[in-house]
Length: 220
Image (tube, rainbow, N blue to C red):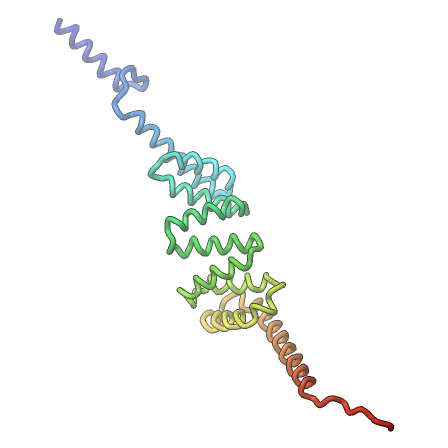
């Protein structure tokens, strides 16, 4: 009887220790599941580093099924869409992230960038102005702000001349070695010419308005 009991106990121990469990260990299934989703996340990171954003996105979507890494994977998935120039999917995801973290300047900058790539310069400029209000000397924000204003050619002359020159002056003063200074300088000169031409046109118009009316010759 003792030998039979010992054999039975040995069998149970062997079964639990073997790879093919005949008697499942409590909680082991959930551990395996958690590990799988962690591996999905790691695979997403690996493909992201390889710049295979489509494949990375697939694994981040799988990784999102694990509750405690949902938002981390969600953010990485949103970045995949940005790097893939999929603005339609990227924008709502970034907005949703911002709703959870309204003061996150990095996410705001990301949304401004997406807007600019969609050609929505108005919203992009508005966000960069908000960011610069909080960090007026931030080099990245200044560069992007200038670039977006320069890209909006239809409204540039009328709406952005003063804003552009002010931001340009700050960038040049604070970061004289900035690699894009020359590009912005050329645009600055173009703006100054526009401004000078506008002032001359305004002066000529005022001069014409203030000039006495021509005297008519009365031959009678």
